[in-house]
Length: 241
Image 1 (cartoon, one colour):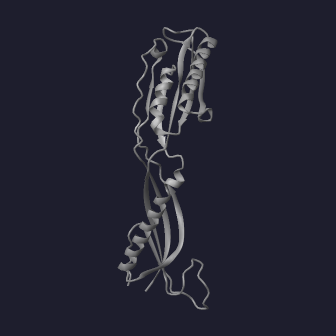
Image 2: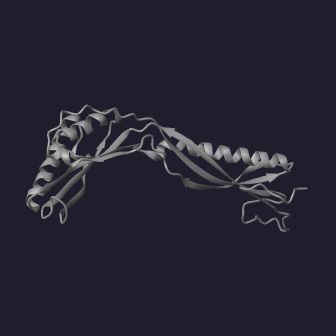
Image 3: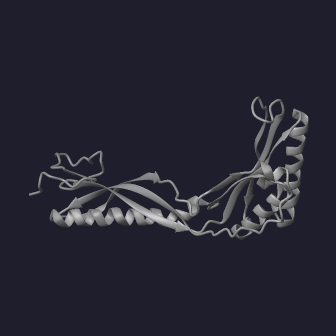
């Protein structure tokens, strides 16, 4: 006889069945027991793309002067990235701003910013791309954000692992109850958890760089590491003696 107390995460429903031989709406047959369990799976994948943002912030005597300088810097950044094989389709404007300064030593002047988001499709070129953008005049940089271009494909093994975890849990419950798993009645995808990034994003903004020419930067090593993805599944199993 099954105990009344149940372990969290599973639901067991025993059906005694009714006459007439009609099928039950939940897919069970006479004398079967419904067991609902959940399982999780995790997959790791090596990032194959890097995304970073670069641009220029500067102060000018008027709005036109400030914005022109920022726009010219972005044009140089784009030109510097092309020799690395980064196409314009992978460069997108992400921020444009201009504002009057009403305080401090630059009061009455204007501050302008122009930033672009860059996608590098080869992680091993990310460091060189960041160095090229900085050398071209970028004084605002954030990233890189390392990710997998096709996360669905990367998570496939996690789905299989989630189902196997659910089945193992069902087998354990069935054994404890003196039953056996007959078949899976239904499978519901529980969705994906947030991917864990392999590296933390680095950000800096240095207005002084716009006023003094720095030495050519050394390409920072960008280590791809691995990203992990977690998925969950809920499965209804039919149990029988």
